[in-house]
Amino acid sequence: MNAWYLICFLSALAVFIAFTNQYILKMQTTIAITTGSVVISLLLILAVKMLGDETAVFITQVVSDIDFNQLLLKGMLGFLLFAGALEIDLAALKRQRWEITILVLFSTLASTFIVGYLSYYVFALLSFPVPLIYCLLFGALISPTDPIAVLAIIKQMSAPQGISIQVEGESLFNDGVGLVIFTTIFAVAFYGTEANFQEVAELFLVDAIGGIVFGLVIALVGHFVIINCKDINTRLLVTLTIPSAGFALANIWEISGALAMVTSGILLGNITRAKASKRSGPDGTRYVKDFWHATDSFLNALLFLIIGMLIVTMPLTWEIIGLGLVMVPVVLLARFISVGSPYLIFKRYREYDKHSVKILTWGGLRGGLALAMAAAIPTNKMVIEGMDLHDIMVIITYVVVIFSIIVQGLTISPLIQKSILAAKEKTK
Image 1 (cartoon, rainbow, N blue to C red):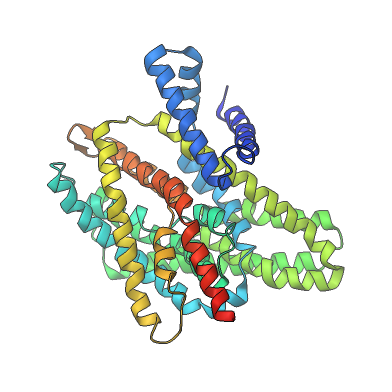
Image 2 (image 1 turned 180 degrees about the horizontal axis):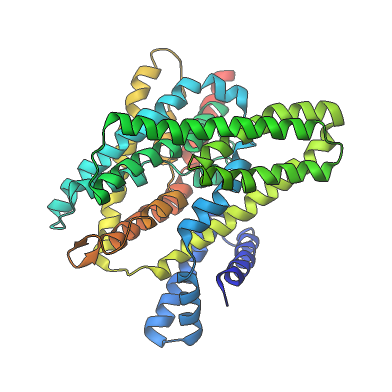
């Protein structure tokens, strides 16, 4: 069995878990799939270690062959971000543009350094000395909220538009900033280069701004073709070309394919869809919209199933799992401070939902992007207490991600319900 066959079978398993979840657990689909895959992975580990089961060993080896970094960052990410961006309300995004910009720029950077310094002292306190530069690297990869995880959970809970657009908008855009921070610290940590303002600014302009400009260009081309195309199937193929060929081209040019997909998706989902509906009626655009809804749901299910199964590939120890659990409150505290601080200024100029900071903190989920960045850390570069730095970072990140998706995802609903009630009371 090769990796492609495994992905096909995992897709079927994801659909099966989603179907049975409707009648048994009745959780949010993403949480149910992730939880189910973690349980399956633990059973595989037990089967390998206690029974020596040949089938379990074989499945574990095939899962290990999946290059998660390439699968997500170079493949699925483009489709997932494009599908999520298609549903963003551009008018609502404009109303919250300053809040989202500050959350994307300031909060991501602030969280990186808060997590970095706090984890440095916590690790030292636990007699597990990790050099500061690697703690900052962990802060950089864990600080951006994952747009895939956030959109998969938040958008199904019908949160008030004001807070949902902040959560969704921030998560869609802050990965570009997070990647610049991660890349800069990565270069200092492993290549000994000095980070100066000019190099960081150049990296940001090329990567982030270049991605946004490229997204505008392909959106304009896509808009022209879709508006002037009479065949519905061809319109659909045009939208498929953007997150496939467009995303690949952005990666080849070394600009932010993620930001390109977000930009093009928002424009096509708002301007192009509205104009196409006027020309051909709502039926002409509903076909494309339904297709991307289904694609988004399917890829999300597959992604979170793979995230859950990644545990079978990790050299787990109770010590590192414990360190990962200790990092959970550190990451949450950094998120609360980095998000709450701007709100002290925001509230002077506009009234917000009183639960905004809590929702942004607890709803700031981490997912596949953090794991992909952790997986990019090279092996055999640094050994700490007998363990490779790569393995340490991946396992700690995995623990934070699983806690984020399952625990935070399961418990965010009451906060959103309070926000919904507050919004209803305000309209009375």
